[in-house]
Length: 239
Ligand SMILES: Nc1nc2c(ncn2[C@@H]2O[C@H](COP(=O)(O)OP(=O)(O)OP(=O)(O)O)[C@@H](O)[C@H]2O)c(=O)[nH]1
Ligand SMILES: [Mg+2]
Image (cartoon, rainbow, N blue to C red; front, top):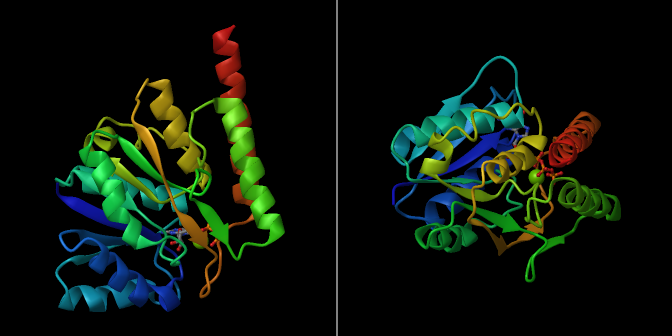
């Protein structure tokens, strides 16, 4: 399988070197792509330097409006259309352990369509998170499960492996969310289309040490509004 590991970045200068080392080591045959939104702290510039010495490292530099969802959409569609059969998305802040990627790829090899690094299946968890953050994530995932019934315990984990075909079939390009609601939207759209093979593997998520979180109230409220809207639409269609 041709594998790409992709990470969207915004101001991750303090994490990028270590992230790339770990991603490159985790899957020696994979190429690594950083989708940077013209980070003012020079993350993109640093990736450019490293890519000039290492042919497995690539930069996709975006300008204009920034956003986790837009960067993820652009990267995923580009990679799926450029011959990668498996595309792994992972945050650059070292919260997610790249060493889990081979286990995720093994699930794709055995027929899964999307593999989700999950905090909420047995063996998974979070470390060093504040109580408020734990409650936010737990409640959000419970509400999403209740409204959308996608059958996935951790709908907001950005650590995933996608089969290239699933992306080429239009699932990603048809999404419209701006923030992390994108992650839930992808799973919801897949379920709407009757796609099965959404598999969760346990991960332990460790709070970032360097750099700043981009989570904010706009992102949280977009997620709540969208999940509520999709859930109500689903209920109406059922009746
Ligand atoms: N390209 C791009 N990447 C982004 C943007 N916002 C966040 N990211 C990246 O998306 C990944 C996840 O962002 P975080 O801020 O760590 O969000 P989070 O993991 O949900 O929140 P924390 O647990 O608080 O860190 C990181 O690699 C970020 O650099 C953006 O606007 N554009
Ligand atoms: Mg993070």
